[in-house]
Image (spheres, rainbow, N blue to C red):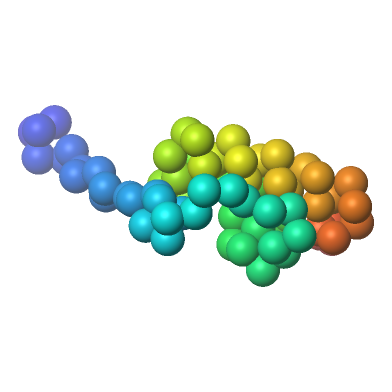
Length: 76
């Protein structure tokens, strides 16, 4: 019974690896918004499917963009 309930995990591929992005720029707000949810929180790696390297780059870029007031800290 337990074996029948198991779900197959979707294999998500890193969007940035497919685009061959080497550096995520904090000024590229359009790209960064794709990795924020509706409340302006950063989407975790397990949900977005990013690799560790690109998830770290995204995290830094989003935090820098927030400092520069390009992205909001929260959406109400």
